[in-house]
Length: 297
Image (cartoon, rainbow, N blue to C red; front, side, top):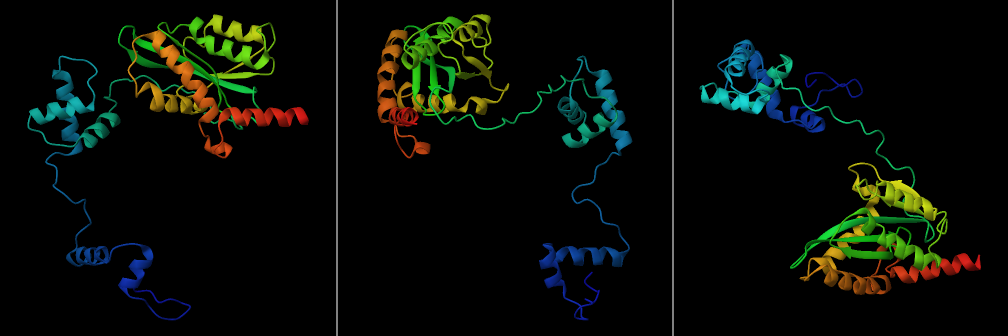
């Protein structure tokens, strides 16, 4: 290419300019020229192996036959080759074992289907979608205590929170119960029709009791994708704030101590915590404004 003449200007360009435009080093040109002058072919740099692929594959088979264990992978085969004084790389060992079908069978990867949410999980008005989940905190007397919470996706307001020593399906429903009583004024059949609750695939949330309670209230269940915490990102972000502002900066005696602390802190959070996507306004103020707009419309 360097020796060719450009048809538009009828001239050739130097090595420096050509290689700069190609984003390559000039030394590559001189190296290839030297190889061509000496009649050599370009080869991979670095130390040369003492074994061909066929010879190394034969040693790999001997290692596998001599091993007292079944299903050893390429890393252990590579280590056993080194113990025999045969030096090679893990990548080459893996390539040869894969080509010869010598790798141990592994668990097939699960096909989960589409992982992309269509649309947004941030609705325009309150009480359209809530998110719920649980997190843990260590206490002196009760050990690990679980904190269940429910949050409104629209306003980021915590609608219910509960601390308990027992992380079962009955305790997981308590934040939903608190939120329904506060938002709808009662707890009865179909009282929360139109509300969607986003949750993960934990045993508490996929249980028959939890799902039946949601159906009784008229709430639609919306499980997030497996191993996709971003699908339940609103409550996950809330838990980060809860941990950084309370759970990780205090010592707690027991579950009742945690319950009192989170209940008091939630009042502070809802009225004074500033949410950037709401123009640095607290969740409770955003809820009141949105509900006032809805009433006037």
